[in-house]
Image (cartoon, rainbow, N blue to C red):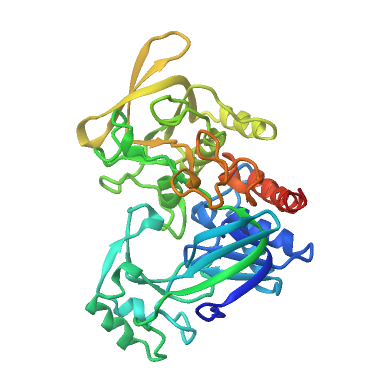
Length: 420
């Protein structure tokens, strides 16, 4: 597992915080320039939000296309040291001379693990699965795709639960070690790249749109998991209330976005993401009606053709209207009420399921980077004058391709900051 000794000091050119697509890209690009990199990730797996997607737009290929290539490039890279289950406690210094104290949290599973799954099979404890946004449960001992190292992990909140002794006893390799302790290490680096990603805006705050009240109102990130073969329904999109088929579905754009009471900005990716998800439904239910309610369709550049292709589909309907309310009807169907932004008239439509396109909130808005790193009014990382350079959605809302491009540029930004 290559976990440093407690109190160890590690020297590197760059510390990259966040092991999603942006952080992985930054670490790889820096290492291929000859730099020594420490890549830390708080989860037990790499890939971040992208690992939860079903497909990329506009090519509609699975995210493993890009993630697996990066994963392999990292595994065989002796210039990148990867520490998962690791958080940054504090940092000091500035450009050219940063010192960060890290905590490597216990996995409670040691290097004897063969990922056979006997521990999970014996585990008597089930908890809501945050990876599937609560749409399913998982065991307290579990495995994730893109796990690094490729070992099982024990939920830290349950490591002291006496019921987990059954997991330890089931492992013939004595890999489950519930007595593991945290390890603290210090990294001395010339710069820090902050790539901690994003959270979907909390749809529970959208009290007129029915999320949390009506079972057939879900968010765009939840639909990604429903469409994924590794998701809670093994890739079959069904109504949560009764697991029924879809005959008519609404996609609600700007759910909380471009709204002074919620997210005042546009995330720039939600329109294309909903068009992508409309195709998921189209493929599984060829006769279903798909209705997208929008303020403006924002699909710039190469994504315009993606939008134009969906417009030509006889089963996909675009409605210029801001959805102001969702109510429940009989059989858990939904009434979607929207005001046409051209005519001012309110129209209502009954559908079987509604998908809220919630925006991107940078994790930096809740957990500030160290060294008094400047943030803009929405929580995105500003300049790199403090020694911390933002990458990916920590810097601005972006799709996968733009995040990769920006993460590559963040390496140059970090190097230039050291010379100021």
